Image (cartoon, rainbow, N blue to C red; front, side, top):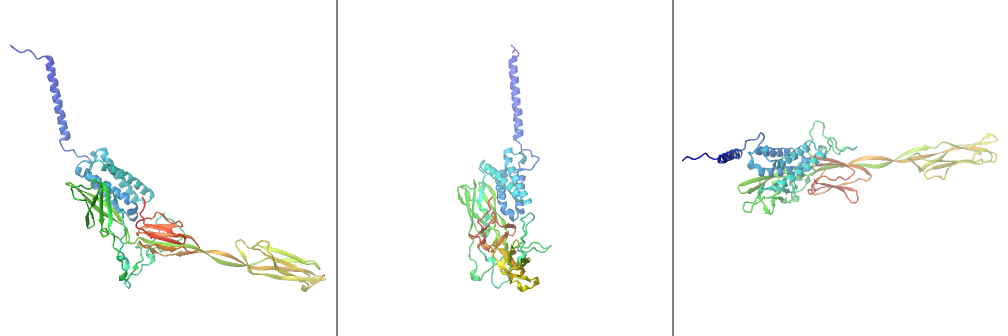
Length: 515
């Protein structure tokens, strides 16, 4: 007995099952190809190369910073460093991955960092309020990205740290000279206080001269302190208190984070989301006249991973700078001249007396010196029966009461000596004219050194009508001011005393700039 043919429906069912099995095999092979083999390299840089480029760019920009930038762009440099280190903490394990294959959301903080670095570069290339304003705006956007990525995972991040500026050293041993040693005060002509193109102009020249053509600008002279051995400063510099705020900076079981600055290393005092270090002031590299950058390495260990963050500080120098004050003082000098009035004629018929009165005003801007004036009888004429006889004239020339204050009035009288005589009198006056002539003199203070400890006091001269203040901070920041008391200068307070008679300049390490 033989089996019959397979029904058509069963044949179709078997064929469908075979097709489904084949499709599953193809899909599995595709998934294996997509995820089971290493990712094909992209055409651009890897994540590791991008991070290395960002770190090199940060170092290059910091190396280009001058005295203005080390103060005005410090926040921008710090924000760029924090975001760079935060990205490195998250993506160094993926160093070999193609950078252009990262998801769009992960590329966004890299883009903000590129924009911040570009803004810093522009502010270095073209210093000005506009470029620095753009850099400040880029700082805000970069910090927003830093805070966003810090909450996405458990990788450590530094969000802020203080202080921004390391105070100057208190000890003044390097600024004192023992009496008798060769330490003559440098001449004032060594300081250049001239403004760069586009600076404030004025009629007055700076107190110090400019070096001859071809000579390079010389260093700022500073008035040294002369002190005997028993008066040498014994002040010790207090430790610099550094506080770091962030997330996942310490683990309960691992070692505490370590901060390294120069040759000094110290463990953190750990509080919730805060690290505190007491760093000796001597650990920070110091310059006598200029600000410098100091960088510390914060080392955070979590399990088997070690993450390093660079903390940037601006160190204030021993000497804050210098200044010069020029004042235009107006005094008056008495100028005099002699005025001879026109001749005045007075005539009288026989037997009569005639008086001619005239008043004179001084020329504009002048006044009469009444103590130095006199009347003059030019001529007295008389006739008796048409025969000339001056003795027949008893006339005179006299001062008369003034009609308006400040005038000189005279009366010329023709008076006969007999009833039949006729007369004529000619007279005038001579007077000294005086006026106050303004004289301007320039009172120069010369170059004076600023001091962190003691304010500089400059008296405002009586009769001052204009002044100009030249300030050179940290041997690199030059400013000019006139009339109004300047504001907004970093680390320098300038104000008039209560009576407005003394200009006070106080170098203050706590007077940080406001960003």
